Image 1 (cartoon, one colour):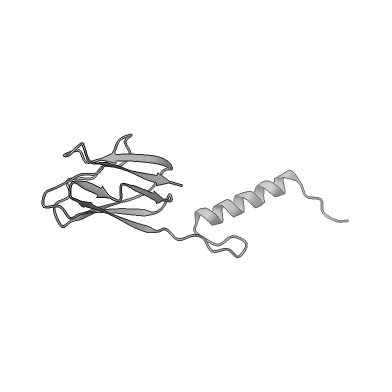
Image 2 (cartoon, rainbow, N blue to C red):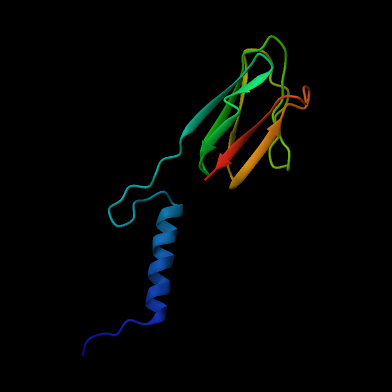
Length: 117
């Protein structure tokens, strides 16, 4: 007698696929997308580029090429750097989605955003 598919089988299958995706393994022969690395330069009192498209899990690095310190702080909360000295950098691994606006707390006219897909 052939086995009938039940709703529970579908749920188990979905859980297996989701667990594999979260573990970074391939699903149905497709490789999981590796996390990317993005660099934002702080120069001339600006974040360059001012808007960056990233994915959850990506690393974003802010490199300070100005002759004085800067910070990076999420407007809505969630990430905040210490002061980043000239010639130094700070990084954060993206852990949320949406548009994440951020500023330099030392120079509030400096603002930019991460667009997390």
